[in-house]
Image (cartoon, rainbow, N blue to C red; front, top):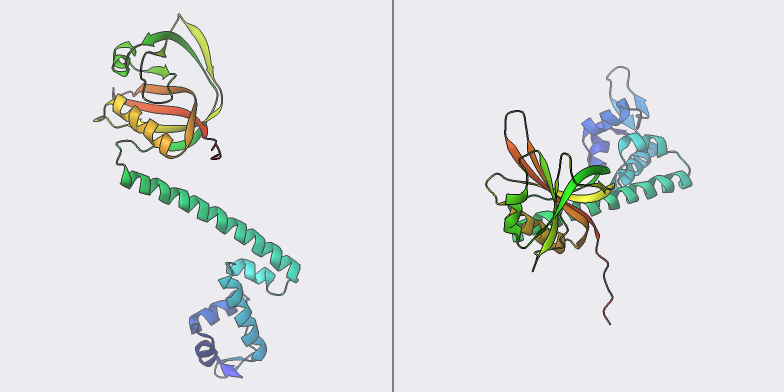
Length: 241
């Protein structure tokens, strides 16, 4: 039999850890001396402790280990399968986050695009034909207002746009969709921000699937904000011949 300090030294854990395991019912000592309060551990407890540590190394939390320590192997394998799936999902999310951060370091931008989903939306709009993006500011009504363009990148000629209208114009429905959104900082030109957004979409292999929305907002204090929004889906890669 070993006292708590001896077992802790043998296995490489702290006495505090062993006491915690006892407190939560995970690993009780084989015996406790009533006179001194010393905890004593035997081979069975050593084996159980090593199994606890082994399951921890496989990614299982203590609360789950308590349920699985004496469970059938099939139950343990199912739990491990779920752990692996969750870890892979977390790794994929972290890899995406790292890629976005590396992209921002490599290509500094004034905007910070975010991917999200939007509900369907109905607008009444008036369509226009423009020759250059610089004309957009002149045709956009005072906020709150919405400007739409049907562009896939920097235009090389004339293009179609639309602005919201209170009374006249056609009805346009934007379906529920996946989008990339970005708030344009007050110090940044909207055209430049749009070019940065197109570049970001290209680098992240996202294709634009509908009109790009330029939302001009105003709050009760009179402060203005512009939000760019592009409907997207992943680009299909064509195999090389």
